[in-house]
Image 1: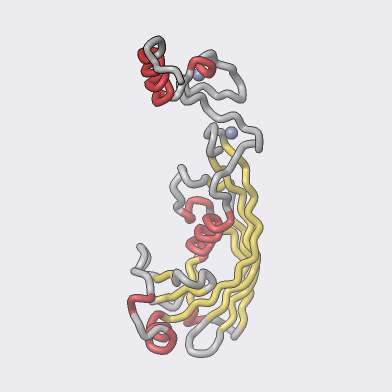
Image 2: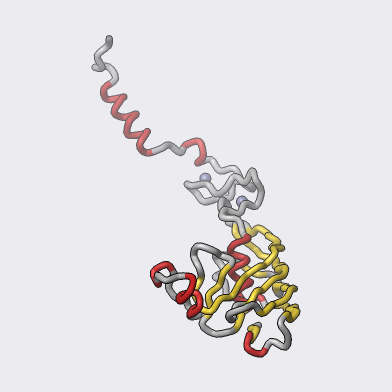
Length: 194
Ligand SMILES: [Zn+2]
Ligand SMILES: [Zn+2]
């Protein structure tokens, strides 16, 4: 799922791909990809070795509810509009200060922290699986919920309060409050009145 930019047959080439879920290589605690990720669009050669990738990306993700950890289905259907710029060009002409560019990531590719639509590349190629993974991270909610009124897990016994009612709920007391209460109790009868 890698587009070699040096061998583009024309200035604008259609790109249609079904990226295997495993290629996204996302940690299961972040999300699980159900089925291939579909991308449809094109890549266009610009000036000075820049390339524009445009299209639409669709994926089905299974996330984990932030409250009860039940699986949450999430459909990604997002437009993609990314400009791929060679690192050398970016550093020489746009960014005189190397500190303004973030460190290399695992793939030796650099992400521009200030503008997420710009991708700096060392090698003239586009890894669609990596594009898909980043788009999924951008699209997914920070705190996915299985339902808006999810009751979450009991902090005491860990039972799912959407399906069971445990008895610890009523007995639970903020330990700081408990300490305060015993202080008040001790001071009770002797407490000065005004
Ligand atoms: Zn939930
Ligand atoms: Zn409980």
